[in-house]
Image 1 (cartoon, one colour):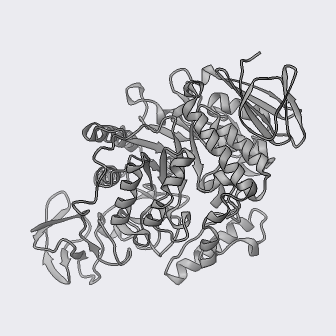
Image 2 (image 1 turned 60 degrees about the vertical axis):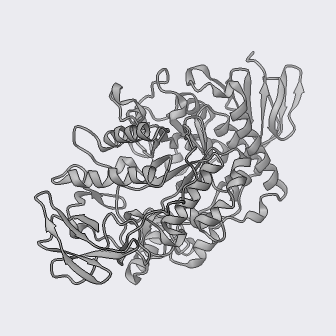
Image 3 (image 1 turned 180 degrees about the vertical axis):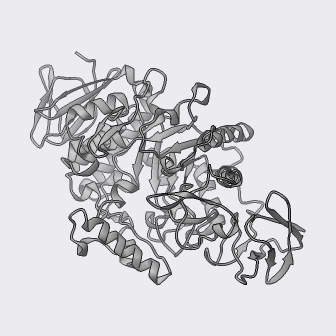
Length: 576
């Protein structure tokens, strides 16, 4: 006997369909409908609302073997599926995280094929794999941020059993796993939740209608979100979540849903006896996200820091358009590296207003912010999905790596970054509905045409080739400068892990010097100096010591060190 339950306060009548046979359900005052029915362990089931004959999938579906428009399926992992009983977890603070998209990480684009690359990630020096959304979404391939059945796992990747195998394999190799979860909106294909209840609010965000977390009847919607988040960590053994665009979670209640989720995550971590982490993506530069709850914050473990990305990218590349407008100088780079945020209650020319709030560097360690030179957003949301490797020299890529990985922040890489992958990462989708497919393609072209791009240059998201172009080319990882860059990344990650001075994560203990005109910058971390030349010409930097890791051929000259154009050197020295 299986108890089936669904929260559906809107319909007057709900029937349970199990393998084609319908059964009545009983409603309680809280809007939940329940029925106890004999069912096979892998039974297909769904719900029929009022007089609409369509069988709808379970909002909390554990599996969608035939896609998001069809019946759900009961699922539990096999009794011998997990072999990670001795996995004790690890903290993300100060770790090296590797963001990847299952569909383009390997030619096959599955969980099982990703397992074949895990030993490579271990050798590289990675601590955590961060997987872009794997929740069920419409179509066969896409970024995953348009999920509609948040509890289910995308079947073309390998479904829930494949995800179990991947996470178990990661843990056997000492790799933690983070799952990218999207709770701020629902996708346009297969979203049946509003038929069941008030899952959507009266507000909206850039991706559609907002989720109801503060309007009438929001309590069950909040529970829906929190239970989903905990499911990834409890049932799939994930070590934490990356929470997409939390600034779009408009919560006017006294206890923000992020604070509530953080408290329940900490309780689950205590129950499981291993650390669990929540990483927020937010563009607010608000330190309350990562401030402990007992000091008035939300208690998130860490936060993506786009200011660090913008400061590094603009300084190295010279790009100044859009949100890069306030960045580009070495002064902006030094300020951001030293203080975590560049905009901290200061005017943002991109937003045309003040932005951010200062970070208390005396009480919040740098490890609660993530530093990166690349993310799926910073590539895929460009008009043609071009990576920095398609526009910069290998030396410039190495300088960016030294600045991010040499900093005291928690580090994150985007798949293929470490060898300067030549593959773009473009925006791709596979909506099966012709009108939605057409609207997606036309909207993408219109958006970038408004910013001066030729519409014909914008890849069609619905074109299969757009997806295929975005797959990594693993054949190039040992070729020439690709292999050289990969080895430098490995050396940088090893230095982060093995050097005691790299373990000091307090920004107040770090100093930064720079020369705006000659375009060099040096971060001092204890006895280590991370010296970078952003100039195309050779420069002399007022620091000397034993070279530990370098790109180029640094040479000593008295009390100084000469750096080739677009190069760096990490030296064991003391500040003069």
